[in-house]
Length: 122
Image 1 (spheres, rainbow, N blue to C red):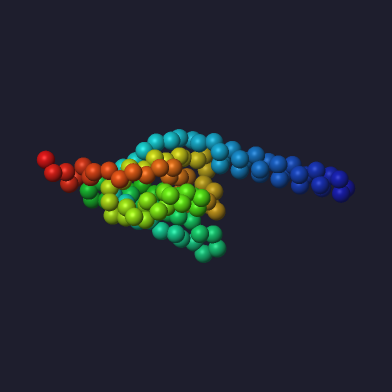
Image 2: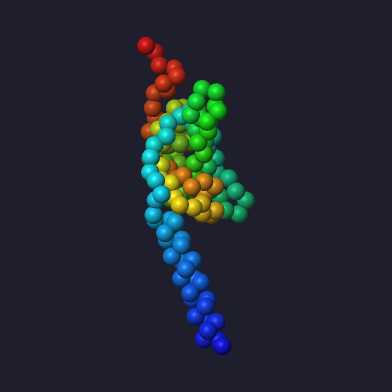
C-alpha cells in the first residue's frame, strides 16, 4: 500500500513539474507594444511581483497590463525611470498565468524609450 501511495505522489509531482516547465519555458507568442507608461509597481502581500500598465491611446481606453520577473533588474530600473514616458515594450506571452511570477501572462523582456506619436513636433 505504501508503494502505491509513493508512486501516485511521484506521478503527481512529475506532472506538476512538466506543466510548470512547459508554461515557464514555452512561449505562446512574442511581440511588441507601445504606449505611455502609466503605472509600474511592486505589489503583493506574501509574494511580491512587478506589475505595470501602458496606455495605448490618447483617451486611455486601451490599457496593456504586464509583469516583470524579479530577476530582470535592468528592465525594472529602466521602467522605474521611464514612468510617464512613451515606451516600446518587447514581451513574451506564456500559455498560462503563474501567480507567484506575476498577475498577467505577458512578461517584459526588453524596454526602450520611444518618441510619442501624439506630441511630435513637425
